[in-house]
Length: 505
Image (cartoon, rainbow, N blue to C red):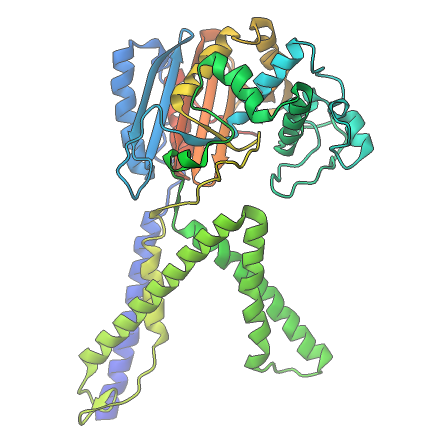
């Protein structure tokens, strides 16, 4: 009878485990993001820029705070230009989830690719001064070749770079300095092209790119806080990027599982055809098990750098430690609850060995999925890490001044500013809009509007800048969260009264 009772208890325990797993999975499924289900699906007639400023302020406060809560965005900074003037600028939330520093319109964010149109503005200034010919090879600015292929050097021009038709890659860490197709023949978004352009501008002006931009563009426009580099002492003042917990964990776990599958398969082939055995001993999988995480770590390092690897490894170790703690705690509680029942665990005062059951690990794993969308701090970019394509640190205030200056053609003149949009190439269509790329800006043309735009997308920092020259209006949204892109698209659409999104086709 005791044996039958023990079997019944075992079946009941297993049923309980499966019920808990199923319930946890159901709860986790309800917590998954629902795409753009919460995004506004209508246009605001005329846009908020047509409203009185005090009404726009109240409406933006309500919209932004609601979307921040829905998308779990920690910090947002916004600037709006109307009639060519900066009329609204405000910060929301906190710069760091671990601190209490409130975001303001002056808070620096990783603006990333928003630095591209500003670098293009600098290039247009040099073109206006006759120092840079838009259709002459950039190689003419160099004493030694910058590109790997002499033919590419003779072909790639500033116009090709600004319209993203240079053929160069978008891999900023290990991008090849060789064009992948004939320059000028088709569109391919390229950050390496902007690295090439920035170096050429530095050679022409015989000064560093950072100093060139500060003296010729930032200072005249009043953008005194912006820079492609920042002093190390100010790095901590930049809004810290935030990502959902699953991202750093999956960054290592995903490649590890892929490498493990590949190496395990190779092990099977070696055993089958090399040693002519059908059965593989478990110990023969040990090299694959040991090599997989090392290869995954190397891949993350090569792709994202040391700091991302360190952060990912740290979060992975904390997650594994938490899994172990929860699993052993559940096992211990089960031992305590089961004591005295037959000879399962405790008999006559003597504790018998009871291994950790897989069900407890399963419960701990599924329970951890409920926390995978928690926002966690990401790594900060080094202050002296300069890259014209991705390293801009700026504030909503400064970028609002840039939009106002761009609308008026400040520094470069209205004619050259107009050319940045007019001399565009067609890319394709998206949601009924014609998407193109001008001399530094993306363009989006509908039946009633033409906007110039650029997104910013570093890990954990998302931003968007949209300018409508005809109405002398614009909006910039900076966020320090991976989900901030959806918020930025919503805000831009409401401010300008144009249903988004501003994305490539």
